[in-house]
Amino acid sequence: MPWRLLRYAMNPAHPDGRMFSRPEKLRNRYDVVIIGGGGHGLAAAYYLAREHGIRNVCVLEKGYIGGGNTGRNTTIIRSNYITPEGVRFYDESVRLWQDLSEDFDLNLFYATRGHYTLAHSDSAMRTMRLRAEINKHYGIASEVVDREILRRELPMMDLSGGGHAPVLGALYHAPGAIARHDAVAWGYARGADRRGVEIHQQTEVLGLAVRSGKIHAVQTSRGTIETDSVLCAVAGATPRILAMLGLTSPVCVHPLQAMVSEPVKPWLDPIVVSGSLHVYVSQSARGELVLGASLDPYELHSTRSTLDFAEGLSAHILDLFPFLSQIRIVRQWAGMADMTPDFSPIMGKTPIGGFYLDAGWGTWGFKATPVAGKTMAHTIATGREHPLAAGFSLERFRNFALTGEKGAAAVGH
Ligand code: FAD
Ligand code: PYC
Image (cartoon, rainbow, N blue to C red; front, top):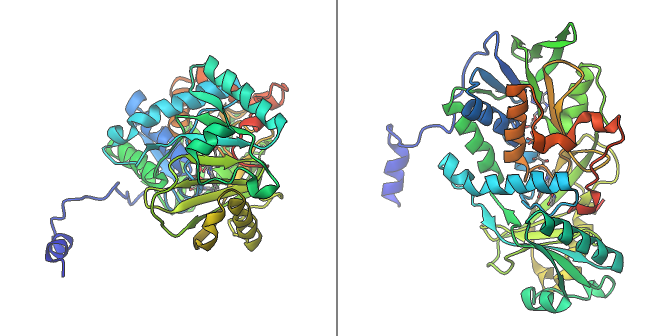
């Protein structure tokens, strides 16, 4: 019997307090109301309080914090994007990630592993070269590597791609990293809570009231709140919240599934992605293989998983790593990805005064959590769009000024 552990657990003066407090009542009014207790909503609350001194803020979460896509994603962090706007934005996020564990005094298990995007055709090699050049231009460590290098660095990979999808080369991105996703939500929540932000779980937003073109009140499952500023950061629920205001956006919601294997001894340090084979894999600190593929090919507001997905992904992972055939899959799940036509997010002001949007994060928003929180907090606090988010306005769809990132999406579509 581990007596010391038992004594520690039973000690009424248990040294560890709760991660964040649970306020019993909603106030009648807040300066800022944030809808969605995922990484993005919590990060915005944290930076509003920390960098702008705006503390009369509440985060409303219909379930539990991190229970949406934040706790369902495969935690890949990288900045090897293809547009200047994307590269600069995600690069700043990678920079912020480096200090986050220290900022929070909480280990996020941030691990720089390196990231390979495999190319199986001449045209894919061309795209990799383009991305490498754009990345290097902005000081980002990306380079095209050939089969010889891949054979040396990934000796366990079958370069014939199961005989039907030979690997010709890859884009190698040294800063590619993974982290512990739930801890990111807890870290932002604790940091925000300590600065006076209220986090209300089990509190659903049911309606929004507008007066003279400006946001005025938020109706929740626990009563109505008055406010002049609302940030909507609800990922797959974005169309539902926008409908409350009669607003539309080009966001379509598709399920994105993933699964993990039983833990095995460490054998895979980098992250390996093949958009053409619809497979990506990394190995977590616990030894599990974290596996994903492409979006479900139809719009659906659901987090159900399918056998189809597990079978297809298993077949493709065996094309690259045939020795995994005996490994067991232990969990499978899905999130609701809020996809935009150009694979870039929607951030900033909307036609309703005081109503801000942080959406369209689709399959790529986990890595952006710190920079999205910081730039959204700036916009809300100053009333000015942050220069880093200039390419991501809702307006761009009206002006045909898209920020096309499909060529840099890790997930096949
Ligand atoms: P969420 O974490 O979904 O938070 C939104 C919250 O809003 C939810 O908790 C929800 O309950 C709440 N909410 C909704 N409606 C209401 C309401 N009416 N009232 C109150 N609360 C409400 N991105 C990467 O960068 N790298 C990856 O490797 C990666 N892999 C992914 C793998 C999968 C399987 C999935 C599904 C996504 C992946 N993503 C990845 C994308 C990433 O997870 C998301 O873009 C990101 O987590 C979005 O964060 P968020 O805070 O905006 O949304
Ligand atoms: O954006 O790198 C990414 C990613 C990988 C898997 C899902 N999204």
